[in-house]
Image (tube, rainbow, N blue to C red):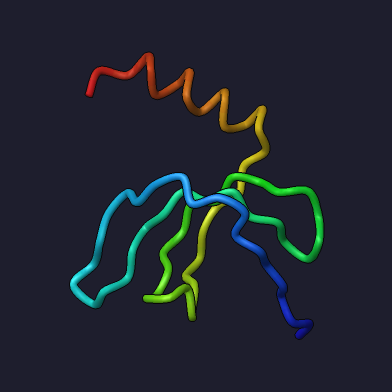
Amino acid sequence: MAEIKYEIQENIGTLGDSSKGWTKELNLISWNGRDPKYDIRDWAPEHSKMGKGITLSHEELKKLKAILNEMEL
């Protein structure tokens, strides 16, 4: 399997913490030198390891925001 290269360009915020010290974060990340995308996933301390996550384009993030704004939370 090819090595995955990433660069966290902006840490936007932390959504939660686990008892093992991992954090669920929203970041702007460039994957394998491509244009950055918004990314939600779990990270180990110091970003040494990552869990499965989801990446969103700017347009997808705007649609998600609109959906969340319509929800009663």
